[in-house]
Image 1: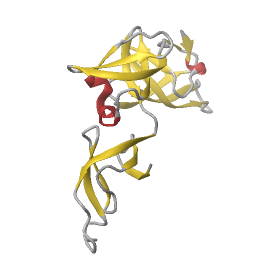
Image 2: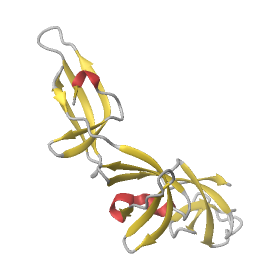
Image 3: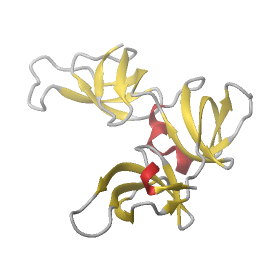
Length: 185
């Protein structure tokens, strides 16, 4: 248990049985009346963002979220199997929790997995990953009507837009948050 005066960005709260991350908070002392804390909270599971106001000094339940560095091993049905690099445990993480990160996950790649009481909440990848282009059409010289990009399929099966000069078999850097091409590796 903590009070609203102890809130910090990134802290995870347990409100009404749901887990919420504190995105922003602001302690407000109006000239009249009691102080209060205005927060912006993001639901850990659904990603929904809400604004919530607490009276100052109110107790809130802080959830224990354990963020661990894990190595992705393989896919088993709808689950992704990771290995904790310290304890060598192998938790199965459902594909619904992995979400879009699955487009940029390669075997033996490390990722941060957030756990709450043994249940995986989300998977965080590094900001950029290096992937090989498995298939793309050759770029035609002088074809600039599309802004100089063409579709490419990566080794993970994800499709992104790349510049015309990229060829099949090249290693490129991809932003895992937006899925955009960053450059050659």
